[in-house]
Amino acid sequence: MQELFIDSVTQSFNQQAILNGVFINCKIGETVGLLGRNGSGKSTLLKIIFGSLKADFKFLKINDTITDKGYLSQNLSYLPQDNFIPSKLTVKKAIEIFCNKHQNELLKIESIASNLNYKFRELSGGNRRFIEALTIIYSDADFVLLDEPFSQLAPLMVEELKRHINRIKIHKGFIVTDHYYNSIINIADRIVLLHNGCNYHIKDSKDLILHGYLPEPKD
Ligand SMILES: Nc1ncnc2c1ncn2[C@@H]1O[C@H](COP(=O)(O)OP(=O)(O)OP(=O)(O)O)[C@@H](O)[C@H]1O
Image 1 (cartoon, rainbow, N blue to C red):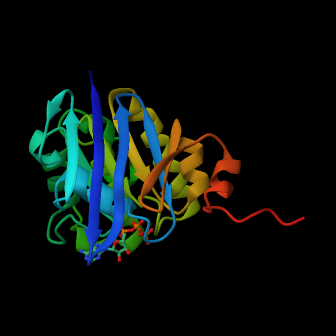
Image 2: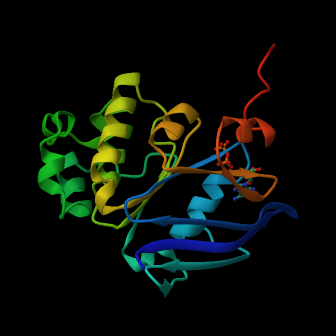
């Protein structure tokens, strides 16, 4: 089955449990929204799936193959919270490295076409984030992890990024986390909330209030 599946994720830092038997999965054609308060372990979970952080324990399968580090499967792309494409690289070069299958679609995007020969260090903070996110969204991997793709982006760019995720998701599975929770709710087929080290499957905004993610409505 074409699925990213991770179970029993357990992680502590300095004797403090952050993740305690967490489970999350994602199929091709699906966008899973990952929500949680600051410090609930969202970035930690994405790093563990990608393989840049070694968990105390986890069981990870990508397309039915048990995998130690997600990146070794060559079927997983990850947008970390901070800039990751080297500053000296041009946009054109980054696209050549990450995107072969969907390169033509990517080259038609105005903000890519007009910045092809710029180095990443020459872009504004928001443009840099936007182009890094697009490079990962249109990368060759079946599964894509996005850690705060909307932060730093002006509202029009947030909307454009959401359109790109929706457009390409027929070919991919996405796990996306961001504090712009309305945007997450908007694009996600389902929501998983991390709270007190556990994962909760969220049906509606009442569940988000129940688990202390959203404030109680005022009378
Ligand atoms: N390398 C580390 N060493 C020690 N503690 C860490 C380390 N990485 C993360 N933590 C702690 O683990 C907890 C979860 O951090 P994480 O960054 O995963 O949270 P988050 O849900 O992504 O938060 P935010 O929404 O604020 O980005 C925090 O308390 C953080 O301080």
